[in-house]
Amino acid sequence: MRPVSKITRNRFKAIAAAALISTSAIATGVLSTAPANAQISIENVAPFSFADLVEAVSPAVVSIRVKTRIEEARGPFGNRDGFRMPDLPEGHPFEDFFKQFEDRRGDRDRPRERFGQAVGSGFIISSDGFVVTNNHVIEDADEVMVVMENGDEMTAKIIGTDPRTDLALLKIEAASDLQYVEFSDNEARVGDWVVAIGNPFGLGGTVTAGIVSARGRDINANAYDDFIQIDAAVNRGNSGGPAFDTTGKVVGVNTAIFSPSGGNVGIAFAIPASTVKQVVFDLMDDGNVTRGYLGVSIQNVSKDIADSVGLDKARGALVTEPAPDSPAQKAGVKSGDIITSVNGTDIDDARDLSRTIAEFSPGTTVEIGIWRNGETVELRVELARLEEEQAINEEDETPQNEPAEPHDTATGLTLVPNDTGDGLLIVDIDPESRAVEKGFAPGDVVLEANGEPVNTIAEFEEQLERVKEAGRSNILVKAARDGVTRFVGLAIE
Image 1: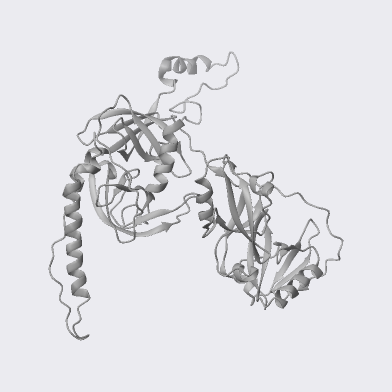
Image 2: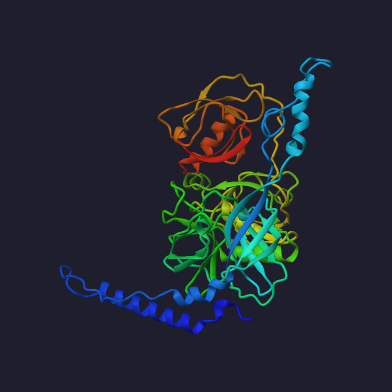
């Protein structure tokens, strides 16, 4: 059976043509060469309809009903209504009195199974019944039912989940010859039409339309955030449902909304089709997603950091620490390196690096471009398999014996040698300095300055002079707080 996105291809072409005509008419009015003070007249052109598109793709959009087992809450005395046989000494006059109540309870004290219900959306991607939805829709499910457009209910099993991207793959049992939709091979552009179909508030198949209002949104959902922002009405229950382009191809999976009230306010987020395809086809193979692992703790490069290391602009991912025995450490990646490219492709920021590395299979050798000491260095790294994030534990070294005399610096930081380990301890900050704006606080430890370890005041001042001699007005400082390190571009005042 052909995918439903191809069933009415000619009608979709007619829709696109109508849209083009409408757009052209509007553009002609806006770009009129009439005098500036003349009224602009725009021809009244009726908008085209999404009805043909919706009719074609709706059979592949499903509702997801999930049953989860809930452990019954027990009373403080060990049962549902709070009764427990008192702990009485043998032969107590009230022993028989209380025992008669305990005996009468019979099976009532046995735990009873209770189930919760949740609803969401999904869509069929193959004629034999593979279904895509969100991980959070089916998380902890004991039973998953797929409800078709015509109301038919079918049992589905969970093939695999990927909490990192909040995606899940289901399989309708004993399914065949189902209508399905395909993913778009083209990236959705800002301003493109999108049609969202799903199961908001459990109402069943509901259609809303809007445009792509932004791309590359980071909502701090996971390390691979790259959401499409759309303004089509998306509400609770739409999670896992598809967002279609005007050709009936899936451009995203509706996953989250921004809403102070809990309802639609015109800002929704969808996982791009390119990400969904990669994850889903990986799950289809063996139920698991495998990702490459570089092994670095990273942060974004600010303009001040870029200025402090001589980088042309704020770009790349700054390595705070390579993980012990990680592929990065073995390949020679150092703390303070800025990863600017992978296999020749520029890296914009820390999340871009995470997403890029995750696209490679374990065992792949990649070439990473690094900005180090004012020049580009190329390193080859064989990626490992990403398991769980590894914490970086730093061992304390032998404390320095320099007298703890506070020293004011040109950065606004007042420093003393760190008696408990490496670096210099911040004991005070000039309230008028840029250091306050950068979030420094007394108790922070300065570990490096200008890419070099600093354990004495003299070493810190030496690096300040080197930066000044190089004609730069910012110095790159590596600082630590509660075991967490970061790099900051700090102005020399």
